[in-house]
Every structure is written in C-alpha cells, then in structure tokens.
Length: 79
Image (cartoon, rainbow, N blue to C red; front, top):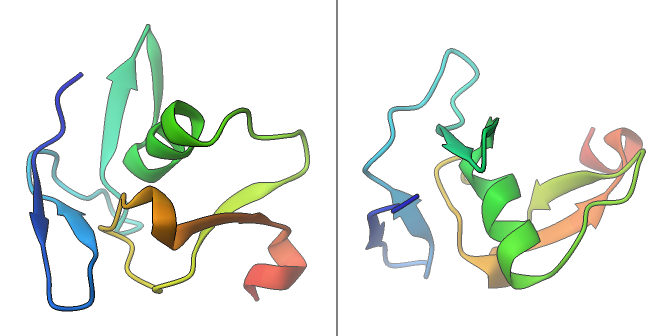
C-alpha cells in the first residue's frame, strides 16, 4: 500500500491518497486487511495494537498518519 501524505503546519502527515469514510478516517487495505490508515501506520512504525486498545491522535486530526502523533489508549481516554 502506498499512502500519499501532505504535511501541514502542525506536522501532521495528512492522508491525501485515500478518501475519508463517513467517520472522517481514511481507510486502506494492507495484506488483505481493511483498516483505518492511522492504524496501519501505527503497526508499521510502532508495533502491534493490543486487544482492547485504540490508536489515538495526539493532534486530534483524523487525516493524520504521522507515527509521532499516534499513541495507544482506551475508549475512555479518547472520550
């Protein structure tokens, strides 16, 4: 999968190659698995996503897939 990004002023790598879905997150298929682009980026650069954890955007930008802007958390952390 190739994801094209555009860096914004805040350092976000905004995905411009995959359209966001109704929830605002771009999705892509990697190795037969369809998922949000930021989750693919997290797995590629930081490792596995444990069961029960979500990948949160520290920047609050749903288009961002900059690994430095991603962190693990829970649904409660994200609320």
